[in-house]
Image (cartoon, rainbow, N blue to C red; front, side, top):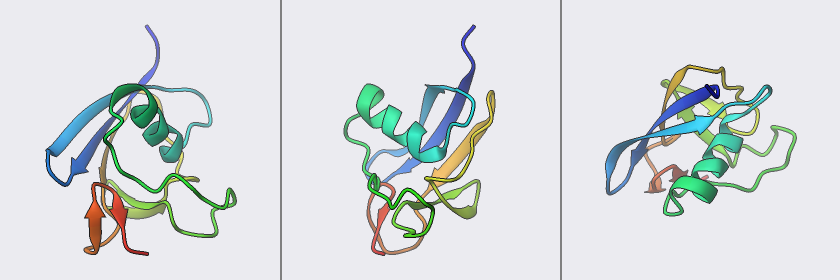
Length: 98
């Protein structure tokens, strides 16, 4: 059986939605969000661009209640993560005003 990770994402108009994503060593939250968008649900809104160094904070989300940069937040196999917007200035799904 392929290792998986579960993301429960707070959506603006759909409430909480659960997604199963194949896991690989070194996977980050941003990679998992891109997988969901590209393969499971193209309507998921999140900030996909980033500096690549964990500096710009455009990809910040709350992961299990803790504010983290999605581009550098590691995911562990067989774990469940609740993902919510980083702040109250929500535009749509995980996109917030920066």
